[in-house]
Amino acid sequence: MSVRTTVTLDDDVLERARDFSKARGLPFRQALNELVRSGLRAETAARPKRAFRVEPRHIGLRPGLSYDNLEALLGFGEGERHK
Image (cartoon, rainbow, N blue to C red; front, top):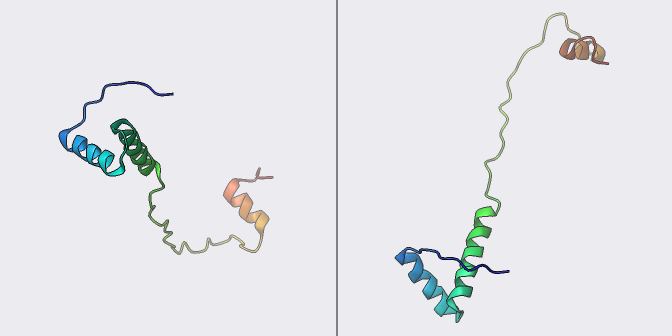
């Protein structure tokens, strides 16, 4: 399905679109559609993301808490109703 619409292009964009059309031997309408599709694909393409970094920090041990007893740790962290 295609829709006819009016779009106002800046002079530099129009010139580049016409050059693109001539260089590929395409009708202007087809060339413009290809350029728009290409721009939309580039916009939605996965951008490189910054690496997730974890900065470790020593938090120490709590006095009186047994780190060998998982049940006691869950009780401390989530309350006695963790079961």
